[in-house]
Length: 373
Ligand code: NAD
Ligand code: TDX
Image 1 (cartoon, rainbow, N blue to C red):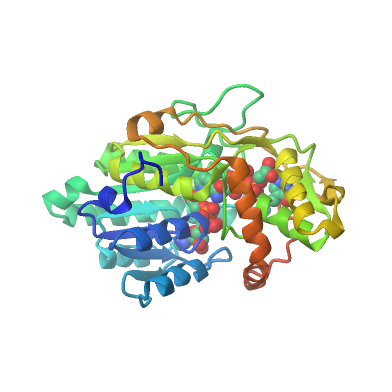
Image 2 (cartoon, rainbow, N blue to C red):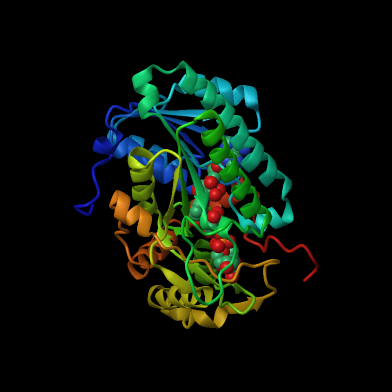
């Protein structure tokens, strides 16, 4: 850990009960693991246990620590669409901090089936806001003063950049996919509940995350698994779309800083100075595979240009000056190191990938084409 990053226990201070929504997903899971490893807080993990959910990584941490499940980690299997169940879960958790990560998160699935994104991401956030509003009214003055609802969002709400410029907290919203539109709507609801009802909130908008335990439908795990299997690697369009890649543990650092030290009503953009074209990412992964499986080299021969994603945003890039200067956040991994570690992790965890794909009834095929190929 860098010297500038305070410990999790220091950041949490007197906050003993943390409600994490979406804690069975990729980023929420990393938050839950950090809280379990680096603090003695009790973590309530509210998740509908959907196709992208899996608790293996959390169970590993509990086993490492010799802790039984259901004591410091308490799963609340609740769908945010169910207002009554959400209210009951918030009452049971009685949290000092809520970190709201639950959302449908895959752009391609939002093209194939936008309805689930509207209900989970918009109605779900509305239900959580209402439940949390009632909760804050029940808190003592001291607990209410320290309480925050932290809403975790994406850079995709800002739309698509050309060759120049970066997104910051003052960039106007311009979402262009059903996913990003649903996230933008949820951001607006959170800000509205702050301004109208005085709810103490913090928002973060982060760029593309990567790292272990990401459900294998997103670019980096898809490419790694296809290359390892000697299958065609799908590169959408001309492959020159740019994403600003951030290692998931660096995102968790930013989330804990923002949740515990962020100013109420303020948003913070998070990005790792990790801009790469998709073609660069895919080629880097292929080069790494050449070292692990030299028999199939060069894996770059597997790269196959496929029809583009409808409405494909061209470029995302984040200016993280605010969170760096105000909260002292710095990413600890550069893309080259993080990508190498992640590719190695996926190669060692192909059984887990098969298991979660099977559970999700997903065969690794192309998602999100709204017209025939
Ligand atoms: P993920 O898909 O891996 O996990 C999301 C979790 O939320 C899943 O376990 C799912 O079951 C749960 N969930 C979805 N709808 C729910 C509902 N209605 N009720 C209860 N639980 C529900 O997603 P992720 O990549 O971990 O993303 C987490 C959050 O971070 C999302 O809000 C996403 O918009 C945001 N984000 C993600 C990235 C990224 O690159 N992955 C970048 C920036 C922001
Ligand atoms: O097989 C693929 N081939 C390909 O070229 C896949 C799955 C993706 N792509 C391209 C599309 C994007 O330009 O790679 C880029 C990254 O795609 P995804 O991994 O699907 O991520 P993206 O659409 O950029 O969104 C991600 O980052 C922002 C997360 O899924 C969102 O939840 C987050 O908000």
